Length: 192
Length: 204
Image (cartoon, rainbow over all chains, first blue to last red; front, side):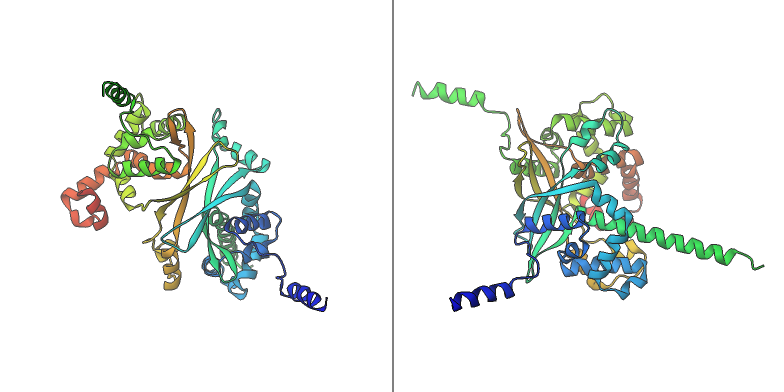
């Protein structure tokens, strides 16, 4: 009994704080689910560190003050603050259908089907020509690449992942342009 | 022997003129092989007819000289004429890796290593120096695509989605902008100005 109790105690202590997704598909599903519930720290933790750092370095290129935060904290904050990012996240939901391996690289490539949400369908309809509704019925798919790291499966690349992150970049660029215009206005205002 | 001969004759008469790829993966492989060997009509015949027609109509809308042709004929001519399409095709590295079925049952998705980002200069793209490690990291990435395949009465056919539209759009842009005419003129008058990779494709 004492042995069993010790074994249970050890297993409980050794368990991770939250369950790590243990397959490529589960990792990708967990990433998109975390985004849709605004659990940005969990979503960011599922990105492979070099991919995360490379992405964050581009944001620092636009706004150098971002260098004060770590890529993990900084990106989670940017996700929470970027309205364009949240709009794109809210436009569709994703389901990982399966994966294939590549003999030439260390990644597993997860096939993800995107389904437009009601909000996304309304937005897409604005850009549809009359009579072209069937185009909305076309299955939209993407491939998200994941890598088996010492911490588990992590996302290294993906069309939709990048497209979502580019929205943050657009928000940062617009903010930078707005700041620039404001400072030009202030410089251009003659002193009374 | 007298029985065997009629069976053989019947078999030969029923055999299709060209072997049809019989799996989603084989269909996509045949599509890319046909494109790279210049057999554009064979490649276009592997696209699902209604979405091929939609793509053709949008191309004809931008280039009225295509109007009135059949989709296969018109688009094959467009590809044949376009140096930019051939260059884009030659610079794409395509390897079909496998297929994933859709639980909804209507489609199968074929995953392909489709387009290499190698050679894209990040410093040039962002207008400022980018660390070498970051450039090497991006060089190591590959761009993967999922192609949508559906089973029709004629066999497996590929739907023209955004992935394929991206591949075919250089041909339409070329016709609209006259890139090929300009390139041929440069090749004639000052070939050294044409990048070596593009010259190699055009001189084939």
